[in-house]
Image (cartoon, rainbow, N blue to C red; front, top):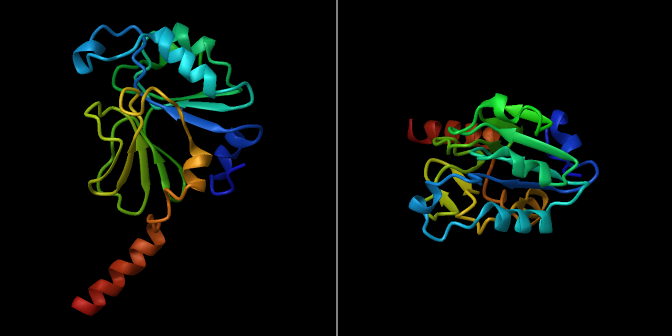
Length: 187
Protein backbone atom coordinates (compact mmCIF):
# COMPACT_ATOMS: atom_id res chain seq x y z
CA UNK A 1 0.00 0.00 0.00
CA UNK A 2 1.19 3.50 -0.81
CA UNK A 3 -0.80 5.80 1.50
CA UNK A 4 0.18 9.02 -0.30
CA UNK A 5 -1.66 8.03 -3.50
CA UNK A 6 -4.90 9.85 -4.23
CA UNK A 7 -7.96 7.74 -3.48
CA UNK A 8 -8.77 6.70 -7.10
CA UNK A 9 -5.29 5.19 -7.45
CA UNK A 10 -4.86 3.44 -4.09
CA UNK A 11 -6.28 0.23 -5.59
CA UNK A 12 -3.21 0.02 -7.85
CA UNK A 13 -1.15 -0.98 -4.80
CA UNK A 14 -3.73 -2.91 -2.78
CA UNK A 15 -2.41 -6.40 -3.54
CA UNK A 16 1.12 -5.87 -4.85
CA UNK A 17 3.66 -3.38 -6.11
CA UNK A 18 3.32 -0.69 -8.76
CA UNK A 19 5.89 -0.95 -11.55
CA UNK A 20 6.39 1.68 -14.25
CA UNK A 21 8.14 1.75 -17.61
CA UNK A 22 7.88 3.81 -20.80
CA UNK A 23 8.78 3.60 -24.46
CA UNK A 24 9.04 -0.15 -24.99
CA UNK A 25 8.35 0.49 -28.70
CA UNK A 26 7.81 -3.24 -29.23
CA UNK A 27 8.78 -4.09 -32.85
CA UNK A 28 9.43 -0.45 -33.80
CA UNK A 29 12.20 -0.55 -36.40
CA UNK A 30 13.29 3.03 -35.64
CA UNK A 31 14.50 2.05 -32.17
CA UNK A 32 17.90 0.95 -33.48
CA UNK A 33 18.30 4.46 -34.93
CA UNK A 34 17.70 5.98 -31.47
CA UNK A 35 19.90 3.47 -29.70
CA UNK A 36 22.00 0.88 -31.58
CA UNK A 37 21.91 -1.36 -28.48
CA UNK A 38 18.09 -1.48 -28.38
CA UNK A 39 17.01 -4.96 -27.29
CA UNK A 40 14.28 -7.12 -28.82
CA UNK A 41 10.70 -7.26 -27.51
CA UNK A 42 11.35 -10.81 -26.31
CA UNK A 43 14.37 -9.65 -24.30
CA UNK A 44 12.33 -6.80 -22.83
CA UNK A 45 9.58 -9.22 -21.83
CA UNK A 46 12.04 -11.46 -20.00
CA UNK A 47 13.13 -8.48 -17.91
CA UNK A 48 9.59 -7.21 -17.30
CA UNK A 49 8.17 -10.65 -16.44
CA UNK A 50 11.09 -11.26 -14.07
CA UNK A 51 10.02 -8.24 -12.03
CA UNK A 52 6.27 -7.70 -12.51
CA UNK A 53 4.09 -10.45 -11.03
CA UNK A 54 0.41 -11.37 -11.04
CA UNK A 55 -0.58 -9.26 -8.02
CA UNK A 56 1.26 -6.14 -9.24
CA UNK A 57 0.13 -3.13 -11.25
CA UNK A 58 2.09 -2.33 -14.41
CA UNK A 59 1.97 1.28 -15.60
CA UNK A 60 3.17 1.91 -19.14
CA UNK A 61 3.99 5.58 -19.66
CA UNK A 62 3.39 5.47 -23.40
CA UNK A 63 4.81 4.41 -26.76
CA UNK A 64 3.99 0.73 -26.35
CA UNK A 65 4.57 -0.55 -29.89
CA UNK A 66 3.01 -3.86 -30.85
CA UNK A 67 0.39 -4.53 -28.18
CA UNK A 68 0.56 -8.31 -28.47
CA UNK A 69 3.47 -8.26 -26.00
CA UNK A 70 1.36 -6.55 -23.32
CA UNK A 71 -0.85 -9.65 -23.13
CA UNK A 72 2.20 -11.63 -21.92
CA UNK A 73 2.71 -9.40 -18.88
CA UNK A 74 0.96 -11.08 -15.94
CA UNK A 75 0.09 -8.02 -13.88
CA UNK A 76 -3.21 -7.82 -12.00
CA UNK A 77 -3.77 -4.32 -13.41
CA UNK A 78 -2.30 -2.72 -16.50
CA UNK A 79 -2.44 1.05 -16.87
CA UNK A 80 -1.48 3.09 -19.96
CA UNK A 81 -0.75 6.78 -20.37
CA UNK A 82 -0.93 7.26 -24.12
CA UNK A 83 2.30 8.32 -25.80
CA UNK A 84 2.82 10.18 -29.03
CA UNK A 85 2.92 6.88 -30.99
CA UNK A 86 -0.16 5.35 -29.32
CA UNK A 87 -3.82 5.23 -30.29
CA UNK A 88 -6.36 4.26 -27.64
CA UNK A 89 -8.15 1.94 -30.06
CA UNK A 90 -4.99 -0.19 -30.47
CA UNK A 91 -4.82 -0.99 -26.75
CA UNK A 92 -8.36 -0.79 -25.36
CA UNK A 93 -8.57 -4.54 -24.76
CA UNK A 94 -5.04 -4.83 -23.32
CA UNK A 95 -5.12 -2.27 -20.51
CA UNK A 96 -7.52 -1.88 -17.57
CA UNK A 97 -7.23 1.91 -17.59
CA UNK A 98 -6.04 4.27 -20.35
CA UNK A 99 -5.31 7.96 -19.82
CA UNK A 100 -4.82 10.51 -22.60
CA UNK A 101 -2.67 13.02 -20.72
CA UNK A 102 -0.62 13.71 -17.60
CA UNK A 103 -1.97 12.26 -14.38
CA UNK A 104 -1.41 13.45 -10.80
CA UNK A 105 -1.52 10.31 -8.66
CA UNK A 106 -0.56 12.11 -5.44
CA UNK A 107 0.12 15.66 -4.30
CA UNK A 108 3.78 15.38 -5.35
CA UNK A 109 3.79 12.80 -8.19
CA UNK A 110 2.87 13.48 -11.79
CA UNK A 111 2.92 10.68 -14.36
CA UNK A 112 3.16 11.63 -18.03
CA UNK A 113 4.54 10.39 -21.31
CA UNK A 114 6.52 13.52 -22.18
CA UNK A 115 8.35 15.57 -19.54
CA UNK A 116 6.34 18.44 -18.04
CA UNK A 117 8.53 21.40 -17.12
CA UNK A 118 8.03 24.20 -14.64
CA UNK A 119 6.41 22.21 -11.84
CA UNK A 120 9.04 22.68 -9.16
CA UNK A 121 6.79 21.24 -6.47
CA UNK A 122 6.39 17.69 -7.80
CA UNK A 123 8.25 14.72 -9.21
CA UNK A 124 7.43 14.12 -12.88
CA UNK A 125 7.85 10.46 -13.82
CA UNK A 126 7.82 10.14 -17.60
CA UNK A 127 9.41 8.65 -20.69
CA UNK A 128 9.77 9.99 -24.23
CA UNK A 129 13.33 11.30 -23.78
CA UNK A 130 15.74 8.70 -25.17
CA UNK A 131 18.83 10.85 -24.56
CA UNK A 132 20.20 8.76 -21.74
CA UNK A 133 19.48 11.01 -18.75
CA UNK A 134 17.48 9.18 -16.09
CA UNK A 135 17.16 11.78 -13.33
CA UNK A 136 17.41 15.50 -13.96
CA UNK A 137 16.27 18.89 -12.68
CA UNK A 138 15.01 21.26 -15.35
CA UNK A 139 12.06 23.23 -14.14
CA UNK A 140 11.26 20.54 -11.58
CA UNK A 141 12.44 17.07 -10.63
CA UNK A 142 12.13 14.40 -13.31
CA UNK A 143 12.60 10.64 -13.51
CA UNK A 144 12.90 9.41 -17.09
CA UNK A 145 11.74 5.80 -17.50
CA UNK A 146 12.22 5.47 -21.26
CA UNK A 147 13.07 1.78 -21.59
CA UNK A 148 16.53 2.27 -23.08
CA UNK A 149 17.41 4.86 -20.39
CA UNK A 150 16.52 2.70 -17.36
CA UNK A 151 17.96 -0.57 -18.69
CA UNK A 152 14.53 -1.84 -19.82
CA UNK A 153 13.72 -2.49 -16.15
CA UNK A 154 10.36 -1.46 -14.71
CA UNK A 155 10.81 0.71 -11.63
CA UNK A 156 8.90 0.14 -8.38
CA UNK A 157 7.04 3.26 -7.24
CA UNK A 158 6.96 2.06 -3.63
CA UNK A 159 10.71 1.46 -3.62
CA UNK A 160 11.36 4.92 -5.09
CA UNK A 161 9.31 6.51 -2.32
CA UNK A 162 10.92 4.38 0.42
CA UNK A 163 14.37 5.31 -0.93
CA UNK A 164 13.54 9.00 -0.54
CA UNK A 165 13.00 10.25 -4.09
CA UNK A 166 10.45 12.74 -2.74
CA UNK A 167 12.67 14.01 0.09
CA UNK A 168 13.59 17.19 -1.79
CA UNK A 169 10.13 17.70 -3.33
CA UNK A 170 8.19 20.04 -1.06
CA UNK A 171 4.79 19.99 -2.68
CA UNK A 172 2.62 22.80 -4.00
CA UNK A 173 1.70 24.06 -0.53
CA UNK A 174 5.35 24.41 0.54
CA UNK A 175 6.19 26.03 -2.81
CA UNK A 176 3.36 28.56 -2.41
CA UNK A 177 4.43 29.46 1.14
CA UNK A 178 8.11 29.80 0.15
CA UNK A 179 7.22 32.10 -2.75
CA UNK A 180 5.02 34.26 -0.52
CA UNK A 181 7.82 34.57 2.04
CA UNK A 182 10.36 35.41 -0.66
CA UNK A 183 8.03 38.02 -2.15
CA UNK A 184 7.51 39.63 1.28
CA UNK A 185 11.26 39.69 2.01
CA UNK A 186 12.25 41.03 -1.41
CA UNK A 187 9.12 43.01 -2.03
